[in-house]
Amino acid sequence: MAAARVSWGDMVKTEAKVTERPSTGAIWGWLEAVPDPEIPVVSVVDLGIVRDVAWQGDMLVVTVTPTYSGCPATAVISLEIEEALHRRGVENIRIKTQISPAWTTDWITEAAREKLRRYGIAPPVGEAACVGALKAPAEVACPHCGSIQTEEVSRFGSTPCKASWRCKDCLEPFDYFKSF
Amino acid sequence: MSVDVKTDNALFELTLRMGDNALILGQQVSAWCGHAPVLEEDIALANTALDLIGQTTLWLGLAGEIEGKGRRADDLAFLRDTRAFRNALIVEQPNGNFGQTLMRQFLFDAWHLPMLTALKSSADKRVADIAEKSAKEAAYHLERSEDLIIRLGDGSDESRRRMQYALDGLWPFAGELTLADEIDAALATRGLAPALADIQTQHVERIRAVLKAATLKPPEGAPIRKGGKAGMHSEHLGFILADMQWLQRAYPGATW
Image 1 (cartoon, rainbow over the protein chains, first blue to last red):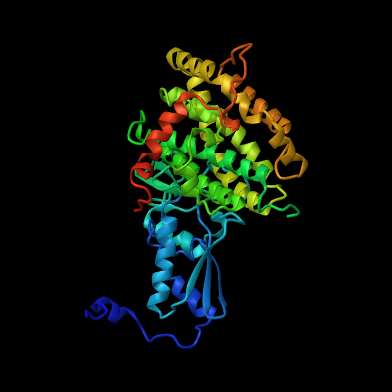
Image 2 (image 1 turned 90 degrees about the horizontal axis):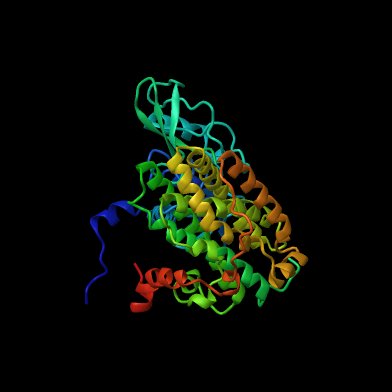
C-alpha cells in the first residue's frame, strides 16, 4: 500500500499540530499574513474581508464577506484562509459567508491604504458607505508622483474594485481603488 | 420574519424574478467580452456582467432554500426550461449593437436600483441582505449607463439616431418591470417587497430626466410587452438557454 503522500513543502510548512485552541488574537495575526489574491501587498484582514473569528467548540468559524458579489477572487480567498490555518495546525474550520452589512471600502485600514499607494494603486478617497455617493471623487492623487492633476479614464478597471485613471503631470496610468 | 417561508410560493417567485433578471442580463452582457468598441467599455461590460452573475448566485441560492427541495443556484440556472424562467422580457432582448445593449442596460438599471433599495426594507431578512449588497452595485451600473445614454444621445447625429432607434425598439419592454400581478400584490401586502406602483414612479421619473438630457424621446402610444414574469417568453430566451445550459445538459453534473 502506498503511504500517505507528504511533500517536503508540507513538512516545512506544517508547524506543531495544535492541541490547544489558539487564541482568536493569534488567529487574527495569522490571517493578517494572508494576501489578497489580486492585490498581494494587502491582506484579507487589511481589506476588511475577514469580519469575525470565533471558536464554536472545536470548530473555528471564520466569517468573511465578499467585496463585490461577482468578484472571482472570493472563492480563492476562502481557500487561502483555510490553507493558512491548516498550516498552523487548525484542522476544523468553517468559512461562513456574510453579506450584511455589505462590504465597504471604509473598512480598509489606514496602513493598507499606504501599502496600496506604494504599490501604485490610489486608495479610496472619502467615505463611501451609502448608495449614491459613488460619483468619481474630485481629487485622486497620482500614486506615482502625488499630483492631483489626474483624470478618470473609465469607472471600471482590471478588477471589479478598481477604476482606470491617468496622471496629467507624469502621464502614467494608474488604478484607483473605488470608494464603494 | 413573521411568515412561514419554508413553502412560501410568493417569496419563491420574488427570488426567481430577481435572480432570473440578473442571470439572463448577465449572460447576455457577458457575450460582449472581447467585442466592445473600446477596451474600457469591454471591461465595464464584463464587470457589470460579473456583478449580475454574482447577484444571481445569491438570489437563486435563496430561491432554492425557500423552495426546500434541495435545488441549488446552479440547478435552478442550468436545469430549468424556458417556461420556468421568471425574468422580464426586456433582459432577453438581443444584444443588438452597442447602443441597443446600453439602452437595455439603462432601462433595466433605472428600475433595478429603486427596486433593490426598496427591498432593503423587506420583512424577510435574507431578501433585505441580498438587496443591500446588490443595490451598491446597481448604483454604479446606473451611473455608467445613464452617463453613456446622455453622451451618445446628446452626441453626434449618428449616435443620436442610433440611440433613438434603440429606445424605440426597447421602450415597450420597460413597463413590464413594474407591472404588478397578484404575486406582487401579495408580497407588498406582507411587507416582503415594495408596491410596484411606487417603483414605477421612480423608474419613470429617472428615465424621463435622463432621456431629456440625452435629447431622446420615448415613442408615443407604444403598448407594454409583457409575459416574462409569468413564464411566457419570446423565442429569444430559448436560444439564450440553449447556449447557457448546453454543457450541463450534455454532461450532467460536470464540474470544474
